[in-house]
Image (cartoon, rainbow, N blue to C red; front, side, top):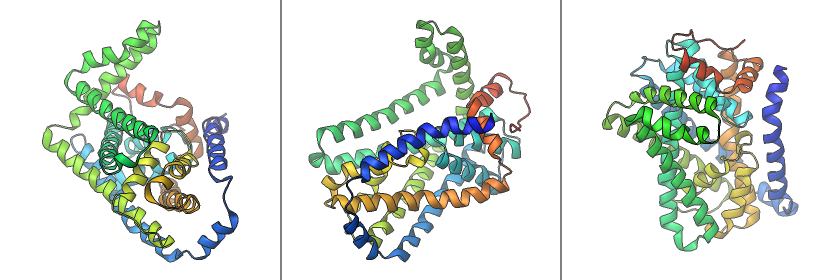
Length: 352
């Protein structure tokens, strides 16, 4: 049953990824592809590793800061669960890796699972807000060159992140009232039990938002987030160098924004969907042929996620994470977190 649990979550994402990859690469000119690959400066791709590593170091530093009002977590205790969470997210679609990350940290430290999960969500929200800022930069630079559909998609993504920020602020200031308003639609359609559970979960999460004690904390977390995404933007540049392509300063930002949109569709590590949106949008914006963008998409995606998967596998083994535990979490999804919300005194454990 546990194996079925993992596959039940993985198979739909894998199917979507395969379809997206087929649609993206079905018209690839094989001869041109091989020609470009032959002329590639492959050693240059190793330059991706340094800024990519720096981005994850800043993720750990940011998470430790978010955890600091709850518990003084060491760098090692935070790094292991964080890398393992990203590793799981790279293999399974959805939010399973975020829950794994929260549970692993609680198993190693005295941080309650609900509080741990709240910091994980906060970090992701700041990632989203940073992406929203990058989206605004891309829109400002490329507005006249974007077609109406692309403009609408980028604006919608930016607005979505801003709405999340407003909800975050509202939960921070008016816990019960905001939770009641958000859960109200479920009550209106007769799902009262689910509405009550959602309201309690939101109130519990709102308590976790006390982590951001004042505006200085918010600014500090924002700066850490800028460092994370600045390093990720730099990690895109060696892909252009390896292919011998010219680039302008905002190209890496554009690629990260588009990749972020592609990641909204639940496939493992955004496979297929990230490739598809890059091939669909980039050729008309940065003056690179479709064939080159197809290769660029492959190299970008591989260099961003393969190191995480390889390192994450080693770290996951060291953290003692097993496939059965991931399966249990995938089956229950956020029930473990909800149980902590409703039973704060419960001892943090990982499912066996």
